[in-house]
Image (cartoon, rainbow, N blue to C red; front, side, top):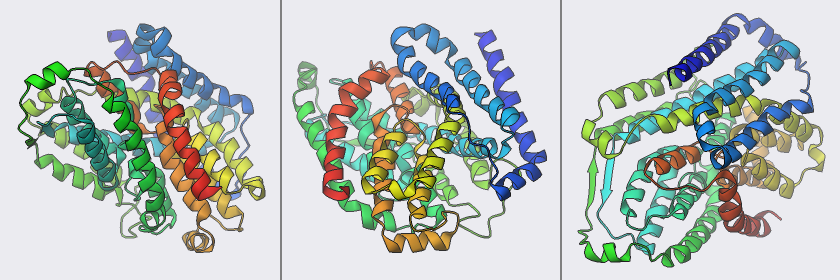
Length: 469
């Protein structure tokens, strides 16, 4: 155990210091690269570390669970270092590394702050978990996801959802929670899911999403809930224990002060120089005031949380540690894949139509981070009209021209994040919390082939046929 901790320190700390040093002293090199766009395309073989990492994530918990649980941080970091060394010493491409590192810091700041802040809130629902009650709970979670984000809603509601269903809990309960609360639900606002927020930062009007996506969101959510209802109706486990219990119907809420922390996190999302011109940039540091605030919330919300609430929630840092280690490898190793995809999309944009944007964005968002995937295909779609995604006025022009492309990219980037455990950050956290609560969650492949493909793909095909074909 001590050796493992030493390894984490010996690998993670130097990596972060090294990247920060590059950012501080390599600014001129990055500027030249950005200005000239003279970045060499990575070798197709550099996609291998990403593929290997995905395969290990999929097979590790299934075939060599104890080995994987003990060594996954080392594996993730080492595969990430392969890509890092290739970009720094073979391609001399500092800009791509700095960009992905900055995205990772923002990603982990948001997830960790929401995770810790929600861990200090205790919600108890003393109500029988009937199929209808569960449907209403998941629908409420899907709506809330648009106000505090999919991560915030997932972290706030997963524990009370598990406790509410404790007499009859099955893996499918958690799977549908991931489908609706951690992903599909957050498709209505830029706050809901990171790719939509990136679109907002680039110039997509804030209310464009809800105005143009609600009529796709509503039937999709209702169809998923309908499937869940019929599955849940067949679940007869725990009926004897449920019959003996007397439910008051009361909802207990403790830790209300942590709602303030959640509000601070959501407001901090907008503290960005691209949104508010008065916000100072901390460049060349690889983070901004937003991330400083979020990490501050991590410290303050945990320090001031009531011990009894943390104990009742069985709160510990293991879920966020798992996400942090796995996604540092995912973020680094996916850089070559994203660049190859972006280059193809932008050079062959005339071959891309609405169907291509919908399925390509969706398929890649299931296994790659959906934020850069969204941005790459938004850039390609704008290229069809000879517009630049980096110019806000041109983004507005694009939205006014033919927003069916933007609609397809926005919907699929959010919806398809539910297809795998790694499709969206909160998916893994919900899985980890559920496993620590004693629920035997399906493996990576079982999740995909038993749940997401048979349930979500037919619904997503229907969405394509009705709205994007």
